[in-house]
Image (cartoon, rainbow, N blue to C red; front, top):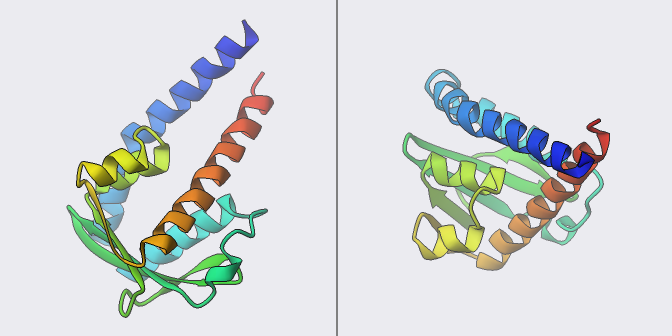
Length: 153
């Protein structure tokens, strides 16, 4: 019974985020410069990855995220297992897709493989970097969801 209540709360939280986050990001893209958005994205990713060291071997790797609708290109460089804002070029790996595809990936409402095979996300360059980044973020999100479920009454 308690587990069912916790799952219902998590579903509610996920629904609220999935409804409000795309609008907030869309507004942010319109009013904030790309470097500020990259900084915010790096901060959020690094909070998720706080106890994770799986990206350490990618130090110096540059990743470009390209959102096609609305258009935005932001860059990151991986240093010491963390993401740092960087110019979007040059890059070793580029992940491209619409905002809703990135949101589905972040909120884990759709499988990353399905997004890729449906051509809603495109990976160019070193796909191994994209996979390693994906696995690190997915496991971090899973761990944080598990902790949140444990905290809910």
